Length: 101
Image (cartoon, rainbow, N blue to C red; front, side):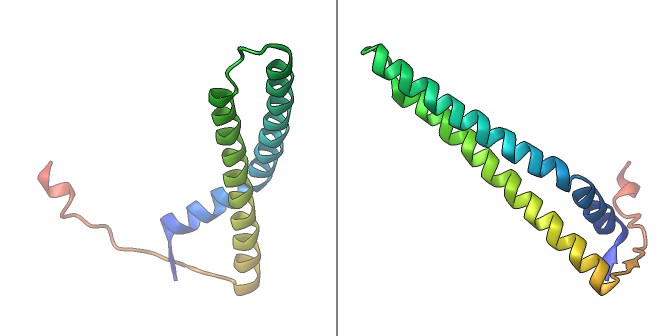
């Protein structure tokens, strides 16, 4: 059984599935373009420091990988929700946290 907050989280993740795929593709394109630009600069300018720029490209490609992973998780969650018919379990509010205010 899922709580209401977990169900909302799953719905948001499923709703953002397409966004995750688009962000992943854009990050890959930007990363590959930067690789081409940096190699061109390195070949035309001997004093160009490619090391720091390479780190930026790696971070962009890692971001693309994470967005692709989130897309896959959202796709799997969507299949599980539709196949299993997961229901929401209402939790009772925890008033002990609010008593300190």
